Image 1 (tube, rainbow, N blue to C red):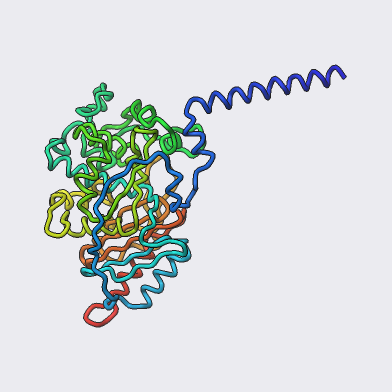
Image 2: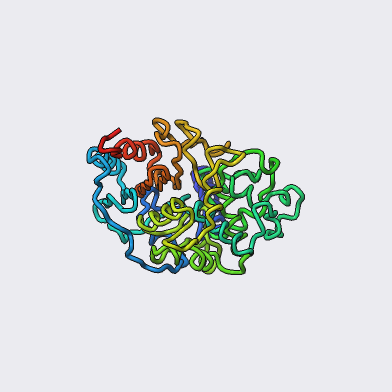
Length: 396
């Protein structure tokens, strides 16, 4: 019996040690472990879970023109809606030639439903960087990011420019991984973002290699805040969001009064994203006001040296292809069942099929938000609608 008691005592000690380890891990970053345990995986409509948030004040304008889908074949809209239904979409919007021609919401959702659209926020960071340059807060895309990031005190990182961050070619170490100990997960859910990102080192020469990474727009968010001397949400509202007519939005902070996640987590409606798409389509104009310089929008939608399918924090559909890779450490790829049928498709990409497709040649915008899909097919919605456009009374 003594040996049994010895085993039980040993197990007790082991269990106590395990409990202490768990408590120790929890105390290193309580918000992270709470979020990890309760994250609403894929359910992008559960925006209340993302706490704390900071309001991005907007102005509500009910000025989106509605019109019948007279130039779109009904069978194309039906096929697009079928794919939206299959993928548990919150919203599907089709804007064409001056009017919103189609607007449908999933059961329980409506035009006021906000969603978490993941990396779609990146394109907004790109637009806001252009605004900060136009306003003189940042000199140009050639300015070293280290001018605003004194933490980058080594020669390699001092060579990284604003343009390198915009084009995902900074050369910084890529952090990824889905296990709880991974820095990529702690960046997504942790309570102190800067503690994760600021120590990252340059592992490749700046400007040479495309590595899609959340850290690049995260640094840009910090640059914008430090350059302007304003909270990121304040400048976003003042310079962009309040001019769109989209109403209030919100960003997710790592802690109360802390740092916003600028690689993800801009909470707005499908119509809010439509207005961002219209800003791109209209070369930075909202009505008669030039909100973002036209030349900046053109550059944002132009191929970068490191990746011809990527501009300034915005994806491009040409050159054509059937899959996109993100970075050397992420096995996930974005799938296209076929190349886009229009040569000038640009798109705002959020994880799992959060999309705003913009096709300037056809004056077309498609917005889809909804449950995250690992096998989202980027060709389905835009090609279905593009093939359904009536030209000269005929469907091509």
